[in-house]
Length: 88
Image 1 (cartoon, helix red, strand yellow):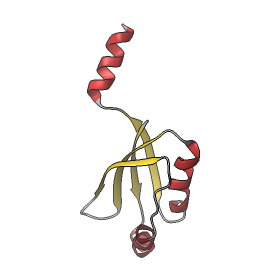
Image 2 (cartoon, one colour):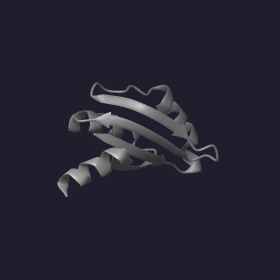
Image 3 (tube, rainbow, N blue to C red):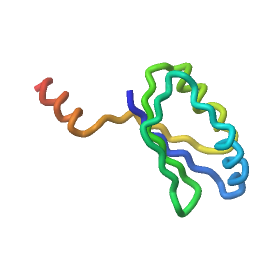
Image 4 (cartoon, helix red, strand yellow):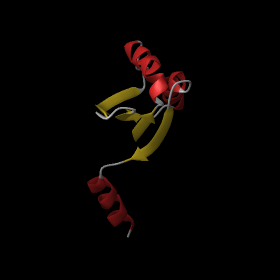
């Protein structure tokens, strides 16, 4: 399943965020599709695939002390429209 995650942090946590990024290890079970950084600061966007709850937790829990994570399951709109038309 694809997940779009938006992480945001307080300006005071910027240095902690940078340290976390330096130590980032992507666990087995997570396949990063793409990543973006908000150039105005304070937000990070990542699109990744994951079908393993343990990998999901291992990827996200280390960040819970320095940022807020909003994670949403997503799919391409063309795939969604195809799936919905098959159900009609």
